[in-house]
Amino acid sequence: MMATIVELVVRLGLVLLFLPFSALDKILGFKHAVAQARQMFTAGAVAAAMILIGLFVEIFCSLGVVTGIADRASAFIIAGYCAATAVLFKPFWAQGDFWSNADGKGRSLFWDFLKNLSLGAGFLLIVVGTNGTGLAPFLAHPFASSQPYGVQP
Image (cartoon, rainbow, N blue to C red; front, side):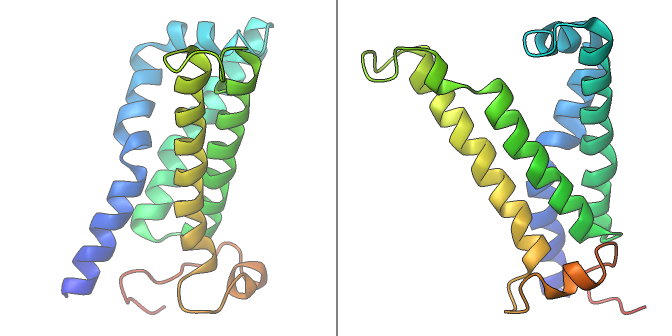
């Protein structure tokens, strides 16, 4: 029973950034989110579509991770989402002040970049597991549950 509670708390901790906070921020501030996305995708329709895709990932994949329904696939998608948002929206290398200013935007973005990648790595632990089975179960049945709460089909 205690292991199940710990598993649930860990999974809730992993998705907490996305659901409810980031998803709710996108919903309540949709125009602002699209304006931010337009920094990367200049066409308004493309920017809006990217925000909607992000919203889908943040809601449905987070629910998959927490409930254990297709949790490996959901975690894999969120890990990719974390990497993509790091590269697209945290370009510390493009600021030009990384080495010259300890308080500059480059350093600030660098830490955010690493946080995104680290969070993605945490989700990859759900994909590969910690029991030594590696990618084999995911590759064999990508939409199967990892049975996080000990419930067998």
